[in-house]
Image 1 (tube, helix red, strand yellow):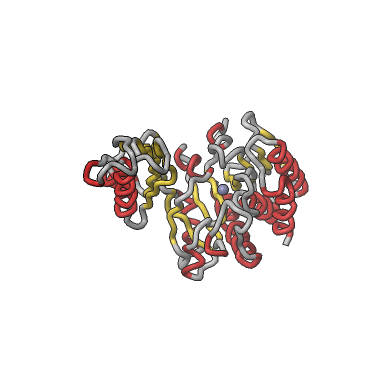
Image 2 (cartoon, rainbow, N blue to C red):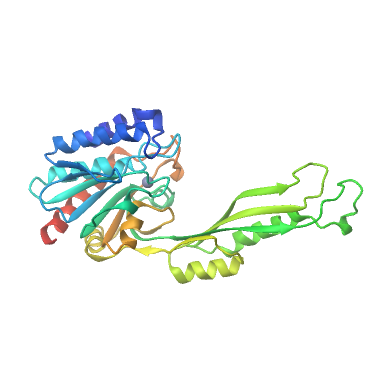
Length: 326
Ligand SMILES: [Zn+2]
């Protein structure tokens, strides 16, 4: 299948590293622009550098991003662009647009700077998690993209000699932080998740009782009330928060019609679709099964040819239905 060859071709650029607004991302956009022209689409680049391949007065958009994390996988983002081009190429007369957004991994930057918004948006993306593989299903319909709250918590103790200070006389900041980290894990009940992924210890010396520890908390939940509850339960003050967004409208209905039995999933990762949905665009996301236990943002990221073929067929049919009414 053409889309698979194109994924391979994109992956040769930068060897899996295509940072937003880098020459490697530029090269990926140039390649995709050629494929868009080949599909008979009119190619345009907006002020943010987002790439559009358009046919007619396209109110329905499909797409994703072509940038990657350093040493990323072959499918994250790129799959949504190549499958989008494939689907639009198959629907010869339908007014549709394929978009490759800029710098999703470091923002999203491109989709936040759109000068115009579509009437409907669909994004196909690799799941980047193990759920579909575990239940043995190739495709999943995303119901919502989880909201996120991040913040830091600081624990103050007292620096003391690690050899001469009795255990009962210590104020060990790292012990307090360790209790908190376990508490964070206990607060996160499915489908909510929470992590402490970064920690700074002062003075960070083997023979000194830790005096000060700073931990970074990342909490996510599929709805706003759930995120509020999680933040309250953990007991931290978010310095940054992104509200959850529901997939909705005609695009979401159409995926539901086409895949009535497919699992419904909440995306724990942010996506360009989140930005469009938050801006009020009726938006849907289709997930393709991740293999290798759902690993992502690394070279082991994998989806099968068969699953990608199936996803491209569903995407094509969804776009045909959407273009017929928009
Ligand atoms: Zn992505």
